[in-house]
Image 1 (cartoon, rainbow, N blue to C red):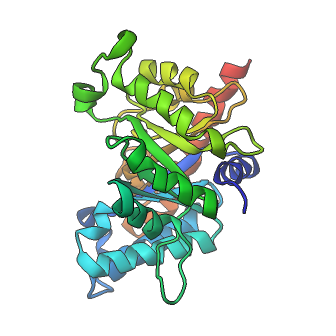
Image 2: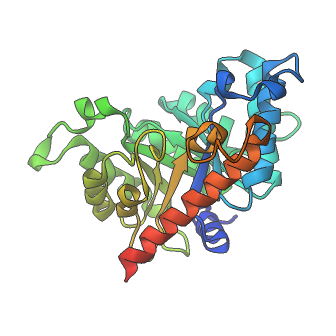
Length: 305
């Protein structure tokens, strides 16, 4: 079974894109015309996601549905999540489930099976390509996910330095030898992913590093040269092409950049609202995804000169 990192690098090269679209459906921002067609919020959310996927599938390399936006609607939300995963994969996209899961032992294994195993008619797992994972429980919590990645060609992205303003309360604390917690976690990511390095030279055990902390990201990149980095915080949270560029290696690979609100609701933005109305929300999303792709690519080209 093909290594997840190899599959992702292949998509990046084929599409010349490093963009991930976060599928975070905020009910208030979904166009009224979509909501009016359905009695169930879950059905409306899937219809919204489907139109977005149709518009951007050749521009982005992954989609990243954040599970909380689906779980809040109970079973209908989870049905929409599963339908979104299946449709995105039909359109050739890799799917990263953003659930930040973890526990230990059999419970951790159950989480891993839910998102990283192969579903069938008796075991309707979500069958995503990758999952975000919390490292707070150490190797006992991470090992079941790593084993599932080995078995099924899947990947995980471990939280290292997150984009939120209060992340430093824990992640920036200094521990042994003057290192911070986030630097120690980065070292563990490199260690935990050592057996999942593919032909591309990258591991299927990756890291989450926020776009809002470029100085820390530069240090992390040196610690984990073989790890893929998922970079949230682009766009609405303040990250831009320049701030995310430090996450990439000299080969222009090694990272993917997520934007959610700035793509999904581009029709509301200053950049696109004059060109696209609410009914053309998917076209606006495509325009923003193309713009983001090109901005990142241009910044990486500058660094390589």
